[in-house]
Image 1 (cartoon, chains in turn purple, red):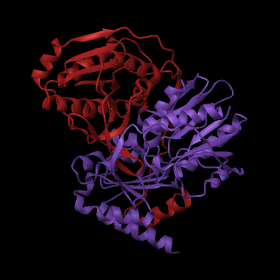
Image 2: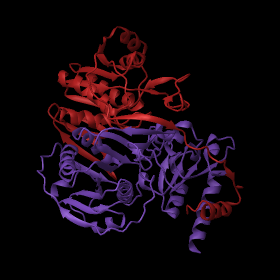
Image 3: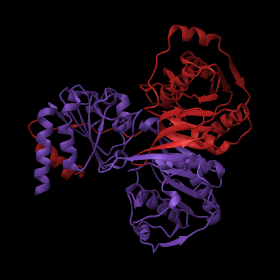
Image 4: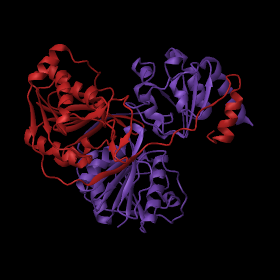
Length: 320
Length: 247
């Protein structure tokens, strides 16, 4: 019995979400009086033993040049074999694109109950009961997992990493490697931008900005805060901004530390995608905008006047 | 070619989320039910587009649930599809749902199984991946484009930090999201035709749930907004820095 954490890496580099899920897994392992181990597939440039800082004990690694792309069927088979070999009873993923692709198949092959979008540590004193977000963040459900093995995916930005020092060691592990199930023809990675789901701060614009040519003020503010940019659904539908920036019930659901909504009225579908943000700031010229009811801080004013001043004030604070 | 599209019933996106019976059940009084948007706008419409190009395609719809799903599956049939199937069992465990669909699909020799990327109620993102694993098929998650040339499918999908274009031989399971297709409104002809399209009720297979929902809770209410005058952005920066400690 142990906790096995799948560590996703983007092009050989460890990511914030991987440290979160490592720390979550180590904390859970401690609670269950067992060890937390990690599984890494492929070649990684970063020092894997730094996962020890987050409480990881052993890091099982299968190195291969064939793992540069996440082939769902191949990865599922590898993970399942490792889980059986190391006798893990809890398997953790980040609720990322990779975790969403892999966790359901891994659960099926292990006959394990699956809970996705987990947002808090499970209750393990009686059974195994996990809190997850439902209704696109408008509510939570506590889900009881009754199978011997449990598979969970952890929402990004929902668990604060804790430093637990363990001396982690990397151990090669050998399992048969199946053939790839798809042939990768191309990959297009967005480089240089902060990925929306991982961003600590998100600056978002809505129809109140009147047109794509006015997005400079959003981008300037985002740059000043090292934030990701996002938008509301009408903005993406009008092709003012790319679809991958659309946050809301039918877009990306995010939970940053700070969400700044500019010129967004705050329709219930939009709120569903952002209401897990820790702090929400709303800038809107309409004092009746429903978003103010869901906000922590607000400015009633014209975005074109307020936002550049806000960017300047932030830069001034940072220069002190 | 045979395509199976998985359809789920969800509360309307504007529905008020509340719970009853000591927070153990969703309060459905007054709730309008819709086809899960990802299933409808992307999975179903994409399948309809493929059939429009090649009318020899057989397009089946499947849902898992009680008789209260019939209105939703009829609505889906009004958009398109030849025939619909409802596996007559209710469950909040994704493994049970996926097992029912996989058992049905296994007998039907489908080349393609389309699902939405998730439902907007349970947000599981689980059914497509589970069906693929149960049937031992390739799984293309979070797909935004699909092209079929007669021998091979070209699928663009969202991955960590970007997108990937995959070539895959069918059969395969594809989970669909924005980009796949555009929302359609059913026309009167479609609505009339849907009334006479077959909707068959399927007896479920025996399968044990591995999870169940114990209780629901709502997030704590916000304390209320602190308004800062528009000419005092420095005041807002100070609050964010010193009080909220987020910048």
